[in-house]
Image (cartoon, rainbow, N blue to C red; front, side, top):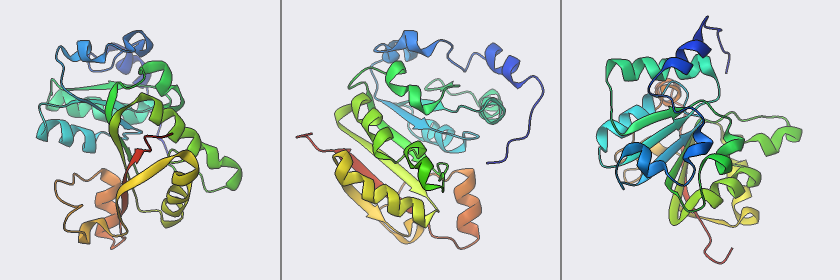
Length: 216
């Protein structure tokens, strides 16, 4: 992703009421942030926030947390919230590697990964969000019956993601190699900015829904 520097983005994020500061202090208490006991879903690497904003709008009885490490990108999601505020959505400006420092074990009901950086060089494989290293982190914060959803247009990354499941101790609930032509899996699908772009070019969108094996 090529990032354009936005002057003052860090200051704007620090001042935004939609961004939770010092999120590690909320570990194990995220329901209290929203003031209810509704399920908590997170999107890791949310980009400009189109997907998670749409999900929060469509599902008011679910709490959503969008995580984005780049302030210039997060700023766009904040601007969207300023236009249409949703009480069940908040943001974190954090690196994905910190999720176990921010969320307690068995605290999250669902995790979304959408069009994550493919990190194409082999030596960077462990940086890919569907890697076994990240799946280990995600598995620790998900509830026992929690699920993780991953979408991408990158065929090589999706093949890698599928190969990582067995050694990481995860199983598939559903898999598609062309989401928009899959009548079941496309139901209720909300597109990201990238998804709109790539699918309009005729590129297939790959998706899986997975859960951690209970005996692992």
